Length: 344
Ligand SMILES: [Zn+2]
Image (cartoon, rainbow, N blue to C red; front, top):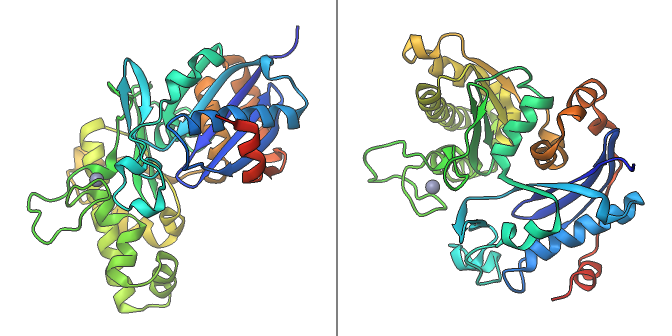
């Protein structure tokens, strides 16, 4: 009997990756710019194409794939019971800045299109799947009460409570970035979703750009150099995030907070600021809460979707041998070649 093979796909606003794995490790990895032209079936077809190409690069037949796990930009909606991706970063029909998304899609029918193609298909948003991956293989191993938070150009989260992954009616649980951080909207920044005073609008990377007038990278550099303006902006950002995390822990009673994403890479600066404000909150809720940086940041593209479908028997050997660290190089597929392979 041939060994079981799994496919994993990560759909982001700019890039979509696919990989194929066997019990011993990752066999092939490919990626392409996320397609933004065509009809609403474009991205499901791109997923099929990338999985097929990953199989070809791995030298295995596509029919041996027993499960596909997809980690994707979100949120989701449901149509006729099937998950539909309604991300404004990909769907031009929902976007506020139309020039970045040259299509009129109002939803990507991922589940309906792909469900018949694989014995097992699981789809989760990029933060929920990251929480699963970190708990299996990263900073969250062995922890039943954890929240994973991405602090990047956006803010999102995924959580386990009592060892149970929170998903919700449309798999949109823990959209932390869209929680409201002020009762008064006057003078508050508008979020990409259209709301006001959302955590993402106040504390994600673009908030630094807006408040400081330069990139987050420059702001953190100048913070370290002691510049007062940069310090003011970063301190405020950290304080707002700390309050957002306090809200999370108040609701979920988490023990562990794992921070991933580009802004959180400045954890040397942010840790004392965030934790100082966080632990000043109501002690019975905040005492003993642990903060850790993500251990899988660079590997989530491979591991997030895969973690959704990984058989129990693979987990311990993967924990021991960490095969993602010896994964083959990621192969870029040219856009033109992709178009040929996909077809309408
Ligand atoms: Zn929002």
